[in-house]
Image 1 (cartoon, rainbow, N blue to C red):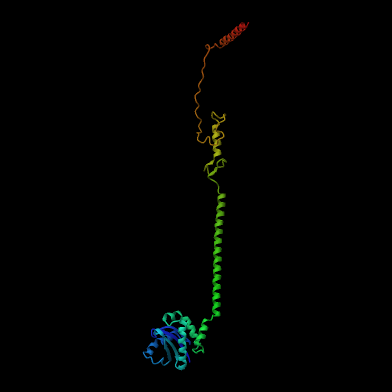
Image 2 (tube, helix red, strand yellow; image 1 turned 90 degrees about the vertical axis):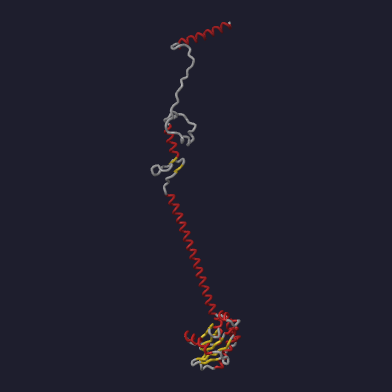
Length: 295
């Protein structure tokens, strides 16, 4: 026997859910064979096979208006074809759990694997039981495990490479920020100071006297200007205070008028000698009077 295709159809054979080909066939031929099946089946329920000039349709109704269909050659043994059909009818609910369109769509690949266990390449039936088919379907594939391990190793390597690239980019950004900070600090240190040089240092003024210069120069200049004034030789109570002359004007203050003290004059003008003689005479008289009294 040679089975060309095994399929599961719904909607009374008008919609193909799963189809597995065991010989080389193009898609258009498969679709044409499946599309012709509902028209050939008709309403007759007395037979489970339909023949055409080229192929034979061997089918079995399932639940919910679904059909299990085998497309074979006309030279195939019909008895063996019916045995294969009954075995597949037992495998389908065992794999899907329930015979419904949603269950078949969900377990489509498992059904194809089960069909491959029943029918070998070329469409020849294998001598196998449903329990062995179930065991084979539950077995793990070494090639699948190797493929999964290889895929996982590639994903891990890609993840490690991504983390290394992210770390390198972060370090590069930090290095650039550090270089910018260092270059900015060096430029600020080498830049000439044009503002406040110092409060007491009196540093040099840059750019034609721009900025405040130094308070010390201002104080020295104020002291030099005030040295020629009337109080240049006299110590000032603000001489130790560097801020004493800040609010004062550089022009000398006007001198106050001098007042001449006048006292009591004894005698007239030119009588100073006569005044002295009278004073001496009075003193001598007092000495004589005192002396005479004592005697």
